[in-house]
Length: 633
Image 1: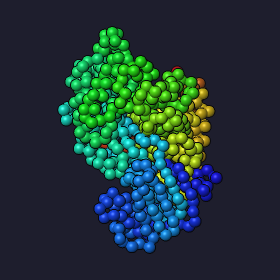
Image 2: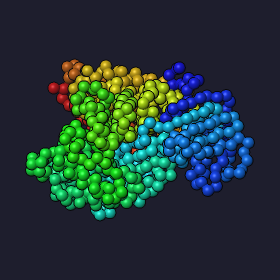
Image 3: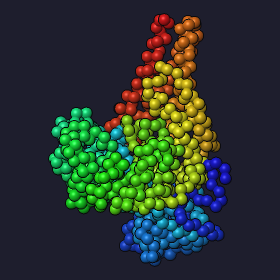
């Protein structure tokens, strides 16, 4: 199989079905008809979706009719109560297609697989498919609190993606980005979502078999809220980013927050976060911690949150990192709390703390808890996600999780330090989470996944575009110094990049591989699906190219400067000034494009932080230019 293509016995399906038997012939969906029961609104909605998808990729729109309508080649739905809720069968023959399931959710998933099989001419290859997921919960979480907050339409686009690729839970990571009615100041000026907006999104998701759920940080990671005057008395201490768990009023405050969240989110889950609370004990909780110990103080607080959640009809989820930090707490915490085990590396990384997350996975379950694993697409503080690292961690953690009896997987998108990485870069990562939470036991090799994803996401014949994204996602791994650190760190124009040059060169080779596939025959310009994503990827590529060339350009400028100080030759000054002018122009152009792309998919709040950082780069260039105008001594 050539890179960027699929073999004749493989199909552009994400996630890939458990069992496929190819049979002879093809069904002409473009000239077929989709039949549904008149009383079944869900079936009518699904029929419209199949018809629209066929028109999108082929230009042909199948007919739709209620039961009793005669079509020579129909698409029908059948019920089989022996199948699990999310299982389905898809029978494609030359004269008819049958989607078979026991529940509406399974029927929807059968329809989504059918949509991915539609060829550019409106035909569907004949085959028999039997399929069901490994994990019951297949989720992504989305950090909306430290940079980008999507517009409502963009949130809906993410929900549609989840639905199409059989991701059934979408968590919004919330610190202060919910507009609580009891305190309207929370989230103001930061793009906070109102209860009405959440209800709109939740209903939109529910219609597409996606559960929209809150991940509300209920102890730490609250640096915005604890700085507000009205919550200062709940703060662990001066400079702390956490509420004080030893103060009984903190639980009453959380109850107020939980009531409003429960009124907006219809999900049965209330995820309390509770990770990275390293500052607890540095202030007001210290006397209680000294007396009773961390395990008991944390357990009492978590159990208090659980009582509140249960009173609201919600199931409490928390991060399981305390199992490593304070193992005794597992004997004290309510066993109906769901533990979420997250890690950013595969087993055997050499880091004892991260490796212990794998060690404690079976222990948490043995203690009587239900457990979910949580890898990450590794996208924070980067020009583009690190899809080598993210893919490997997702494959390893999901496989370990299913083998130990975990019920689900939640892949995290984080937005540390401004969330400069556009969500439009995340589709590939969301795609491999869909694949490896549905098929956790047998993770697929990334090159094969990439080709399947390219055709599923961009349309028939676009396998190579998925492979191009795979190569773009190698850059952060190849370039060990990091694109973000190169652009915004303190080294540029100050000291030479020496050790980094080899890895920068390796990253440039990945970018060359991307370019060869992405711009192949200009085929990306005629994609049938998700064309709006192309400009974002073009932008990511050009910025990554700029950053990986920067060490070489910076070193050249430092060399020129040293030579000019020694020789005083005007041609050295001219060469350097031209280079600096070009660097400033390029960054100003990136800034302009970044703002335009941000405004297309995100609320305006949070943008200026990132633009200011780009302005800072230009300022460094201007300062460098001043040195060339100064005295050589």
